Image (tube, rainbow, N blue to C red):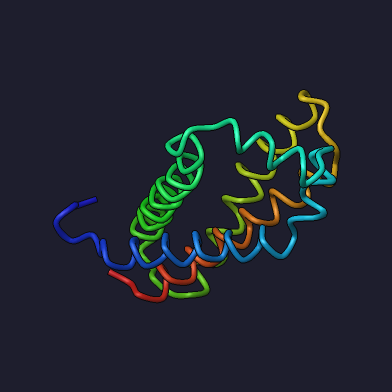
Length: 142
């Protein structure tokens, strides 16, 4: 892949859109997500109170960087497929999510003794993010 011809604007827009989606998703599902974690809102607030400002913001930065990497990777997959369409982006994103993200989250949560609902909620968030990224990167093309 020739990096000079990469549509970095589509990658950036896709990552921002996915990041914003995650904020809306977890805000809307905060109560079931906390219950799936086995925590109360008070426990979560107490944990956050003990953290520095950098420690509080770092997960948000990490997720944004992850979404940039996902967008770049899906872009690369579409380059190698030789097709940039919304449909191709959505299908590629869904296959990558199913084959890599869902399986990894489910495995990690199973070994960590986490509740199944946590896997459902977290993998759902990543499915939404990846579909958004795939649609934007695929739709905006090279």
